[in-house]
Length: 312
Image (spheres, rainbow, N blue to C red):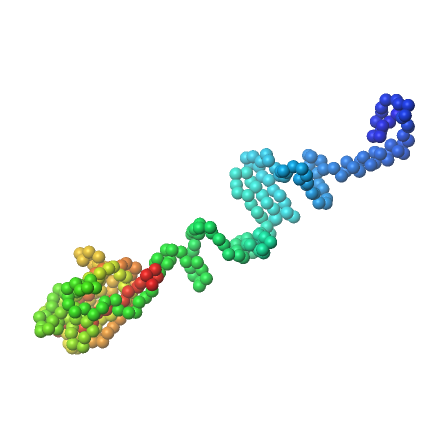
């Protein structure tokens, strides 16, 4: 019986030659070695590099294409702590024990996570391409980004008085109006309400014999936020206000108490009072509950604004 190159029986031929057992064993040994170098399509393990050539093709597909419900695909990169994983119906996960670093020929771009934290670090400028960044936290340190809301609600405490010198109670060119529930009649308007906003050594406002439940009021040309105000009582030391409220309003029918003092005399030197409110008002008044003397009143009143950063 003749045998071909692979040791199989074939037709007789005049040119056929017989193969010895030694040659046959050698061929089977070589065949076995060659088969051992092949990868089994049903699953196998290889050692060494796997290089897939594109050749003349325009596209070479590598991967798994039949994943479905309740199935997962994982590409291990050393062990389960370093892998790319896809659970069907969920985002693809990149898992790296020491984080993930993105690089390009120009250098490192960003670094995601690490051994002990999951912080993302961007190592180059970020071009948002006219897109927004949302849900930023309230800035704490000097290098934190500030949101629009933070800027819009941030205020600078102004220590320059808001109300200019006023020369009458009626509306002037700046739009301020001063009024009072009681004014004592005196020559040259010496006791008119506007005197509290006039930098004068002599003028002051005083009531016409009223010592309780009276007020002096200022209407501003715009709504403002106040962080403090100042007051000075009459220059005489016997006609003093001691129970009073500083109030704000936007319709003059409802007044909000912004500061209250009880048994606290307003002296004849300027005193400052802080106000804690975020509301802007166009009307302010000093409402006096009780005072002493014949014609109590004030010689100075000033407002100090909290100005939004956007206005600076």
